[in-house]
Amino acid sequence: MAWTQLPSSVEVVEVGPRDGLQNESTPLAAATKIELVDRLGAAGLRAIEAAAFVSPRWVPQMADGAAVLGGIRRLPGVCYSALVPNERGMEAALAAGVQEVVVFSAASESFAQRNINCSIAESIRRFEPVAQRARAAGVRVRGSVSCALGCPYEGAVAPAAVADVVRRMEQLGCDSVDIADTIGVGTPGAVQAVFEAAAAVLPMARLAGHFHDTYGQALANVLAALELGVRSFHASVAGLGGCPYARGATGNLATEDLLYMLHGLGIATGVDLQAVVDCGEFISRAVGRASTSRAARALLAARAHASAPGASH
Image (cartoon, rainbow, N blue to C red):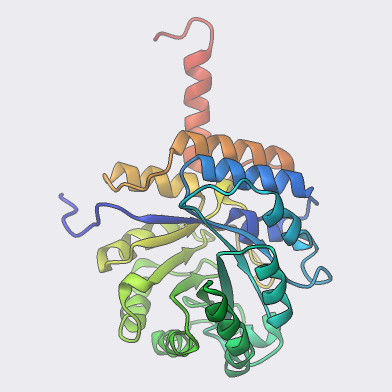
């Protein structure tokens, strides 16, 4: 079968340093996070979500955002982004030299109330001054729609509800919008229905897929979105992360697994898979647990076999 509808290249947005690490219980030094970001940039990733400027009371793992952005080796052509919840976070992000800020809401009222303590409409209004400040500073704004494929409190989410939040984010001034399967319940048919609804209010070229792998559907969901024309996908090195508001939700799609599939389809990413495997090994040792990436585990096993005494070359 020829994959005639697939693109020749795709943007991979690395979210491990922020969305991944914020849910890890092991405290990490800023120096470790800086090294991770630097390693990911050296591996060829050109969009890296590096930090968050949120209350350290609620997300202690992200308390050192300014130190991380101030310590990284900034590579030309790499966009370093940070999540910001309000104007105070926006000012801190600008002072740290962020190039893109991430604002967020949800497609589910229940999730919005429990995650950010306000309604969807209130969350958008809260970000109006943030977006205005970003535009004045020449900083990109990326919107993220949580629970776009399902909610831990409400269950199924209607594609029309997702499209409504995407429309509000476009009106807010977002340059692009992420469609996030926060609890990993989406399947390919549902993914296509949601993206088709979202594309009715924002061009597909400005939408991105953010899939978690709770039910093992993340790669299938990427392929479903690729077939519709989505050209940007989020992933987390070593599969770091999860969702503290959804019982049983596992981490983001592993960057290594995404790269292995894309490269196997002949889709260029500009990223060195083997170098990302090394990044995953580095951060997995730092957090004290094994990588969840199947591709990484297989590639490391193949390396070990190739270097073992008596192995044929």
